Length: 473
Image (cartoon, rainbow, N blue to C red):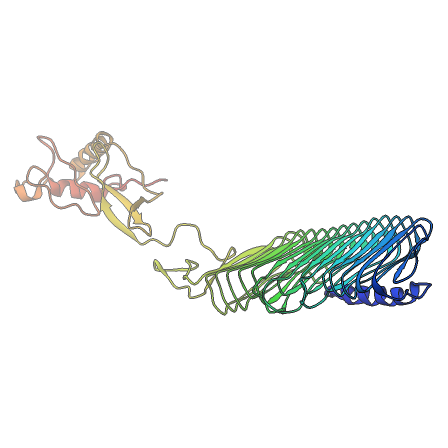
């Protein structure tokens, strides 16, 4: 898709000027200080009418001509004012204020009014309302319409034009000097420009809105194709372009370029200068894509080809983020957790991708520890997670102490029948004395008449590992 170019205003102005220059079939009457003509009576001195029209001229050089209209009128009030209503029916043309001009050709049920220096023009169509307002002594403005049911207004210096049907075009000048233009071409479009700059809607049911009271005339806002919206709020330079189907391009408080192409896609720049934020579709519609820059400068943020491409830059400077196809990418100035290496973050990138974010448990180093819970064996093989908390080894079975004592007593009895008992009563080697520190092999408190530690050790060595740790088969 080629970029929409806002040329409709210049083209419309040329068509209106040329048509009006050749469309009047009679020469304008000579101007006088004041004149009045109605129903073909009182023609002369600058006023001309026919059986169904009227003409009023007040002021030096005022001209009011309704000779070639049907059930209409021409009103010229002010010095050097000029009103021509020709080949029209049920249409009023009026020029109020010095150097005001209102020219109407082939209009039906319309109003064509200029207040102050400037030109209001209607060339063909039905139910058009054209209004130009400009303070005395200011630069003349231009307001024009061609088509059906258009409403066009220009307040202050600038240009406002509509070509097509049921378009609404409004231009409002601010105190800042600079070129201002607003234009709509197609059906059901809205174009609104406040302050220097340009707003254009081309296609069907599109909206281009720009508020740039402090602009210099270098900002442009354009909406094209079908149901798209281009919005610029207080961005003084840059371009906002939505050339899409039901897409949005929005710039708020930034001098940046924002572009949207595709279907149901959007691009946003908020509080940042020098950025390029875009959704692109190439030959595809690239539906449901979104690109966003928040509080950043000099960034390039692109959601490419979709569908479901999401990319955002937050608080970054001079960053480039491109999301090709479906996926999510978010860039921040903070280092994200993306890779794990011995429990430490090794990522140095400023962007986080959904494909490389590890939301699972990090690598853990396994250590032996004791669990002195009542009624449970003292040892358990555990690991530690990233917070240092112990986690149980899934291969370890924790059994009640009574069960463990029964199994050990049976194992010790078998060992006494085949091994040599120790006759040593050294209290340091039996469980009757102080309990030694916990180790990887646990020791349980023994009752009276229990075999010595040496015998138990020998018994444990001769059994199938039932003592201490109990493992799944």
